[in-house]
Length: 477
Image (cartoon, rainbow, N blue to C red; front, side, top):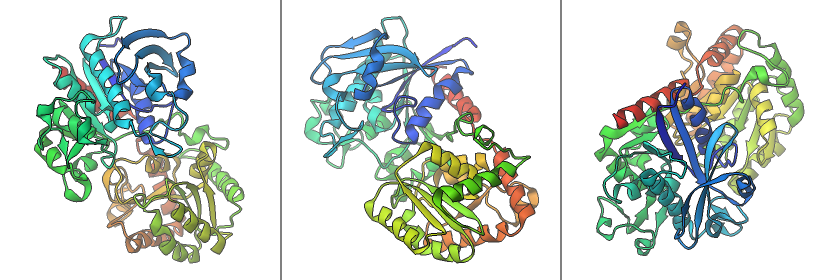
């Protein structure tokens, strides 16, 4: 299909180049999903140390000599089917460590580093690249790209529209007020209705007050963000701009996450392979589980509700259940999971860290996946669970509420149930959901029906990409 729309996506990480979380998955999936809808998207991200080797053979398409302390050059090339624009600014990004932090914590100059990414994005939007390409839409993701809509808005008349997508409002890009001039922001905009945020600056707030459209990664999260308990201090500005706020549910890459592509394949109409995968999963974690085998693949943080597990798992284990856990995070929570493993060595298995291959085995072999998050903008884990017939047990928040149909008499009678939801996010409510899970497990025909419902449920990018394409079209008229 001919590309009729030009979009510049601005993001701090993107697969296949770099991933620290779900943001990278979304940034990598959107360009290919949108290409089928006539949208030509280029992805602008920093060339961190581990990505700089890819610049060899690429063409310099843009250059900024005075980029917050040094020269920045934008190289263009196609990697993994995505048209990348890599911002090479060694004084900001050529460092040992992660994209946001080093051995001793967050990089102190993160405000300048990601202001530079935003500055270049806005300049490309205004003047285009050396090859003649110029976007019609500037699509910015999270706080790292938050100053881009502001630079575009405050740089004079413009014909390019901007979007900010909030992937997690807990991260807001805060900076000291004295950096106002250094970050090239207009002093007259330092007030409560614009840049000022609790005495400092917030790149995310800057985007929220200047962008032409605001999206979040699920419809329910868009509603929640206007409430004090979820808005993290920004609920007021979101409520003021409610007419341009929308929620578009993320999808997953159904080629990468597919039960019929696993070592022991299976499908919704032939689940025998899942039984073999379950045996392999038990062997990998040295488990013997007579009842439902649950999995957890998650960061170990209170936000993810991992602290609830020590209280609820003993009852689940006594009912015949077991659990395999993969993740890392809070050392205290890692220790609590280790303690559960020591207490129930044949029912609880723990791997601290992350292993992509092991995670695939867990989804293909598990019976249920637990996602007891206190807040969850969208969540991909529950969608992987749907895809693999590994029934999600989720808190009824954010995108979890948007993507799972709770097992109850009405949904079972209608034949649409896909998992278990619970509210509020407490140990008692989670324990109740696990009891319902165990009861369904003992009804094999009903369990298999819910598995098939889950596996049929659409979790790809088709519907979401169509919504983004429509939003782009509305913005450019």
